[in-house]
Amino acid sequence: MSEVVISAQSVGKTFGAGPDMVKALGGVSVDIFQNEFFTMLGPSGCGKTTLLRLIGGFEQASYGQILLEGQPLNDLPPFKRPINTVFQSYALFPHLTVRQNITFGLEMKSVSRREANARADEMLDLVQLAEYGDRVPSQLSGGQQQRIALARALAPAPKVLLLDEPLSALDLKLRKEMQVELKRLQTETGITFVFVTHDQEEALAMSDRIAVMQSGQILQVGGPREIYEQPTHRFVADFIGDSNFLIGDLVEAPNGGRAINFGESQVINFTQDVAADKSNDVTVSIRPERLDIVGADSAVANQLAGTVRAVTYFGTDTTYRVDLDGQATVTVRMQNGDGATAQFAQGDRVGVVVPSDAIRVLVD
Amino acid sequence: MKVDASNPLWRFRGITSTAMFFFAYLYLPIVVLIALSFNENRLATIWTGFTTDWYLVALSNDDMLRAAQNSLVVAVSATVIATIAATLAAMGMTRGRFRGENGVSAMLVLPLLVPEIVTAIATLLFFVAIGIKLGLLTIIVAHTVFCIPFAYLPIRARLEGMDPSLAEAANDLYANEWQAFKRVTLPLLWPGILSGAMLSFIISLDDFVISYFVGGAGATTLPIYIFGMIRIGITPEVNAISAMMLLVSIIFVSVSFLIDRIRY
Image 1 (spheres, each protein chain N blue to C red):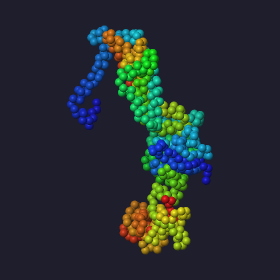
Image 2 (tube, chains in turn yellow, cyan):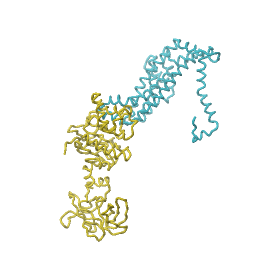
Image 3 (tube, one colour):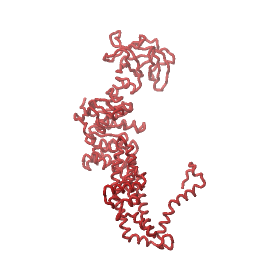
Image 4 (cartoon, each protein chain N blue to C red):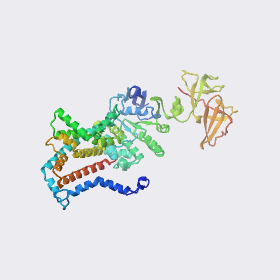
């Protein structure tokens, strides 16, 4: 892996004091690497924006420290950090033209006017708004303002670009476009992007790595595929995509492997390596599209018996709600295509086939 | 006039005459005052013919000019000091919350509500107690105090409407606190500041009660001078001076209003 740019070391932040004290961030550690698109994902109030503002220097950490390329940032004000921000409200200076907005940071860094203007042209080209340099922000659409905010933040060539939910004000179509655009800009400039969002789809589509946050803690850090397919916490599995949660006991499989007993002698083999600090009543997560549904008399291995409670047809796929014997209800999503053979109705006795690598044993 | 039929008040038959009576009540005396300033007759209330002589008389009256100059010195000084103080107060009140904020906020605008005569007497007693010689300086100090809330309100309103991330964005783009203030906050705030300053100026220029109490002998401002003239007898010269003051006030208030409407 490449070099670490930002390193947060047990960083915490509390607001207020006494009974009104709010713990926004509770001792978070994470490394962000050179040239990666790093996303902090979580619901509002999870501490993602606080961590971003600590990196930007807009808040001071209550404890812990943040390093930039090995140097502690703690005492540096925002204007001394080689880090720029795209604000949620864009915060374009309304009294300056687009070009003056873009050259603002360069001017403050005492770059010559000629050089700054050349750089502004380059940035306007980069965000495909070359003709708009002489307008003022109020003459631009939301999407255009967004691009100018990006150009302004990228112009001083920061080591890290912070993005605070920059797409949340755009409509769906524009948001999809900007997702592609952001990824392109990150690849072209080679600058490390630290992106904050509550939108899991956005995070999966753009990120190299995602940190899933809840209640001021980072629960899991990993690539989009890892986060989706191998969630470590119930919150992660629930927040990103849909998931089925079942409770069972870890047991020794008859053939020597690992297995999980869901009661009523429903035992399923699985492949994940689990640290065996707890073996009774563990929660497992299974994605609905990994499950398969077969007739009750089918001889396929690794199946749980149950009864179909509801069938919903969605066009591209069909969703079955199946009451498992002695267990909760699970959702099974079957794709409707040429090979789709499963046709079951409400009340049918069925088997739900669980691939052994589809089971994720969760920490909590 | 475009009439909004959804307002039930418009169905009231007497609305037009009531409104006309109201406006006449407000403005007729002023119209009469201006008209009589062009009256040829020495007695202000008897019309004999049109002349602009009274304006020439007023403008060549050295005492009047001295009083006007005093008024200007007081208004400009009080406005500058009050506006700076109000700007600082508004910035302090807008950034971050603190204990007792509501109380401080109320105290800032309280001078608007205290009866002027009370302020005048209190200020006079205060100056006498600490042994300051009454004169232009004491008027300036007293005016500064009651000008602050007038300057403060429009500046505060501007600041409240400003996106707090603008200053953060300036900091983020390598501008230190002072540069961020100079390059971003101040340019966005200036319509509010100017509007507040103009309002202060007019309030100070017009003030009579406080100036009268804390001025002492020799420090005659224009309203005090006019009051003195009236006691001798109303001539069209008084009307002419008043009309000129009115003109200055109207200009300042209009400009203040227009500036405050500037939006980005």
